[in-house]
Image (tube, rainbow, N blue to C red):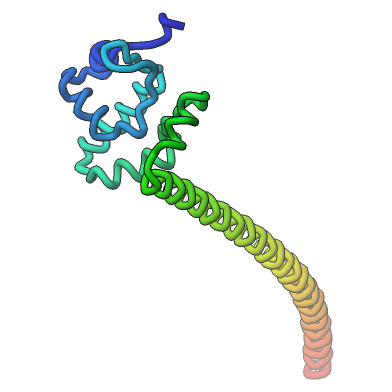
Length: 188
């Protein structure tokens, strides 16, 4: 697994960035940078390359840091560090003053509210998609009915047109016959 992990210098080299720039991006958007380890032993996964590339391209396109964070939040899961629950951490948590516990509880409540909001947005989008599908089906049915109506009217028009042409041809024949008779009557 060590081979798969990269240093920030290796990542900067792959992206043709100055190492200081790559570190600046890492520090500025730390919540979105996948990493393993602590301090000087911190290493980064290959996904970090794409995250830093996205950040660099965003700044090159003159996006604000907030715009880039919004894009990253849609593209990458945010890093959240959890303490391993052991007897020591449990005892330490129990010894913390009440304000810290309240703060952790508040953060958890905010996260749950955000998750609830996200779930509601997803439900609303699914409902909207279902309505759009129904609307599309209705429009397609209307188009089919219109096509059938138009075809029926065109066939009726063609039939009447053919009848009119036959009547005109018959009338022409009668006129020609009448004129021919008048011609012979005139000579007699």
